[in-house]
Amino acid sequence: MKVLQYTVTFTLAEEGGYTVTAPALPGCISEGETYEEALQNIKEAIQAYVESLQKDGLPIPEEISEKVKIPA
Image (cartoon, rainbow, N blue to C red; front, side, top):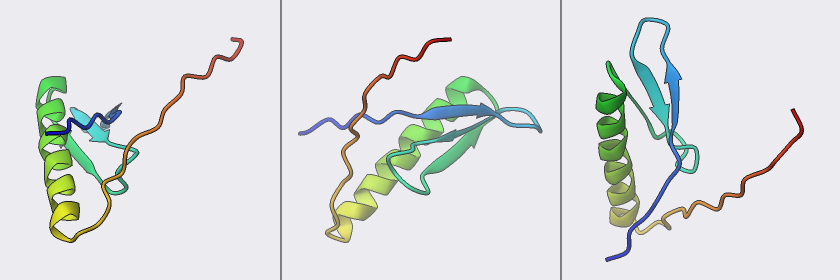
């Protein structure tokens, strides 16, 4: 079984809690009242997203990332 890894981005929501996205998976977004809840929810959202792609016979995106250093 292949293990996929995706970067997720947390944003503090104005109304409280967190909004979290997986940039490599367009439209994959979730939220939670706490960081831990938001993390668990995005994991579930990613799993559902990947399962949907598999069901439809579509390719599963693999994330390619590189860290870029800039002077601050």
